[in-house]
Amino acid sequence: MNTHDINPELRAYVEQSILPLYDGFDAAHQREHALMVIGQSLAIIDDLRSQGEPVDPDMAYATAAYHDTGLTEGRATHHLASGRIVRADSRLRQWFTAGQIETMAQAVEDHRASATTPPRSIYGRIVAEADRMIDPELVVQRTIQYGLDHYPGLSREEHYRRTVAHLHEKYGRQGYLKLWFANSPNAPRLERLRQLIDQPTALRALFDQQYPALMKQ
Picture (cartoon, rainbow, N blue to C red):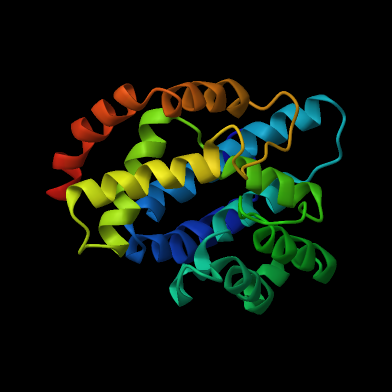
């Protein structure tokens, strides 16, 4: 499924009014990230629909587009702010019922990997899964970028230690990240990342390769 399968008026509104919000966020959550989550959401939708699941592509598209908009209010509770933004956007009523809007609001609230309870709907599981593009090099890069953006006073070694700690906490074999679909394309990617995390020499080499270029951005 491509974005041309999405209601064209909804797509135009998202592209003109929602995606530009991401241009003001930190380097790990720019427009490229939103587009990645949209693309992965639609790929998951393709698989679910091929299995006969009655999922709405417009709802999945909008949920993905709005999932991080709450970063306008800061990172700590951005998922809750994203839900408020969905509920408050009167333009969405042009394409969705009140019930659908509430489902999408709950889905963006539920998308965080650190959530302690499962998403309340399949749309929450879709966006939670799509938000995890588990490419080892990209994950390390985004972790470093986040550290540079939010902790600029740290030394190089402190950034490395923060990167390693975050990778173990979130992606390690005892980490909190969950995959929500049995045949997720993220499963083999997550295993490759875990193998990297398990090899400190290789992880350090990747950090040392990426860090200087990211420092200059």
